[in-house]
Amino acid sequence: MADAKLIDGKAFAMGLRERVAAGVADLVGKGGPKPGLATVLVGADPASQVYVRSKGKLAVELGMASFDRKLPAETTEQELLAVIAELNADPAINGILVQLPLPKHIDTAKVLLAIDPAKDVDGFHPINVGRLGSIAPGAVLDFPVPCTPLGVTMLLQDALGSLAGCNAVVVGRSNLVGRPVAQLLLRLDCTVTITHSRTRDLPALCRQADILVVAIGKTEFVRGDWIKPGAAVIDVGINRIPTTEGKSRLVGDVAFAEAQKVAGHLTPVPGGVGPMTVACLMYNTLQAARRVAGLPYVAV
Image (tube, rainbow, N blue to C red):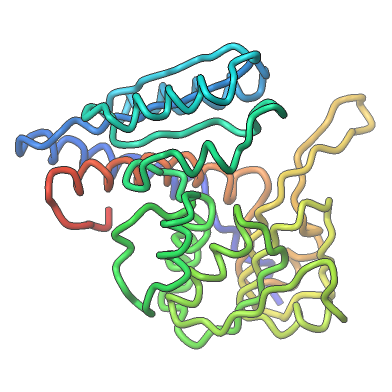
């Protein structure tokens, strides 16, 4: 059997960014609002600063407006909620992203609940979570959807075409990836099994999957002999391990070299799912601006 065909998430994300930029230009050219993305960072975590800066820079590159709110680590919960209320009321802002994790003295759930569901471009507000959980098969996603799961399904549809009837196994049940990606796969007419740390005989279940999505946060957890020959394997994991040169490298939750000999399609780490997350954030922000303009959802 030939090695798996690699799913190039970096290339797909670049194409999605270009389509979003065209969508922004079209919206503004027709008199619609210039999409605005607000990022909120509490504290000075170096990694979070890099993430927020890159998101703001990309928004501007795609023709959007970027609003950065940097708050000190000692910001109180009430002060942060006041900032959220201000952003909710600002018509120039279509999307609000609060960079996680927040300091321990702030209730993350309360902050996410305070964001206007229409501006919740991360798709984490309970109203948007509920809408995703109750969506009919094939229905239009006319509300914000979590970015990484959305990116996973975009890559799968691009690689496989129709997913109808596929047996999909999701390894991991987090609210960030596992659960929403399962809901999106159900919408696309897959038969979905969600597995987790208490699942019995996990390898046997994985071997039944036409589509295997792994988001468990354990380095090279899924081995090659867990994979059904020809399956599409989406590795959402990002784990840093040391090298013999004293440096480090990124690996996924799937043993890549083993999986490559068995799978039909496979995402690498890095360069697979990772680039899709920020591209889908921009996609969600464009859709939010279109809704403000009274325009329907449009796939780009």
